[in-house]
Amino acid sequence: MIKTIISKFLQMIIVLFILTTLTFILMKVLPGNPVGKILHLDTSQVSNSQIKATENKLGLNDSIFSQWWHWFSQLLHFDLGTSYQTGDSVSKELLNYISPTLIITFGTLVLSMIISMPLGIIAALNYHKSLDKLTRILTSLSVSLPSFFIGLVLLFIFNQKLNLLPTSEEEGSITSYILPIVTMSIGMCAYYIRFIRSNLLEQYQSPIVEASRLRGMPEKYILFHDIFKPTMLPVIPLLGLSIGSLIGGTVVIENLFDIPGLGYFLVDSIKSRDYPVIQGCVLLIGFFVVIINTIADLLALFIDPKQRFAMMSKHQLFNFKQSNIDKSEGDHHEF
Image (tube, rainbow, N blue to C red; front, top):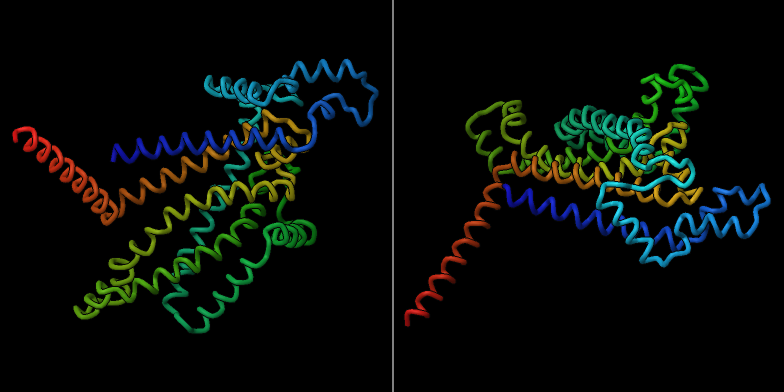
């Protein structure tokens, strides 16, 4: 287990390094210059000397490698730099915007699981019946509709027409997160309902279920004691993978509902070419995605005895081969 944790930690460092380096290179090769936004060149008259001075101050005239090394040196000291637009620390800015994104992301995960688990089980228990067919039709429709379209429909119905749910303009109201969470949950529920349904149907064909039925066990016992845990185990790594798509989806949803979250902040930073903020946002998002995936993998390993047994067998086989190699080398030296 300890070796697995260390391996996952090293993988996380490598992934984050590659991700942030690619982001840095991409920002440098794309057209646009942050100086234009900082000095408001589109609305004011600025001399060339002032433009050059600003570029030199920001280090934009240095070589790409020098800029990368300066950024990486700061990163080693846990310093994400300073925002070009506000002059504040990027870490401080990210802390101000991260809360709404986390509320939407984890709220969507919780709501999706609360809805998907019972509906997936009900659909499997009513296989090829009217309820199952209706569930498949609704999930297919949900998957085919983009999240921003669903958000527009919900915003029009519940905010504009019925005036039931507030918008994000009403700060401090937790109810302003209901529509964004529901918007993102609709599409995610469709995937999880289908996934749980297919897993459950597959488990019903397993030898364990046949043995329980031969012993005369009731269907409720078979569902909750024999197949529920094997059905839900693959969902845990899938939840970790969903974090990335959810945080990516908040970029659209936060701008649609005017929520000042990380996605909203990232879009504004891209428009203004605020390189330190963009790199900080990507690094933070990547960090959350990798951490959640690592936790999900370790949790699945801890819960699933098959995975633990496979890992222990692998280590035992490696140790056995190593001991045989050492023994053969010792015999060779004696000879």
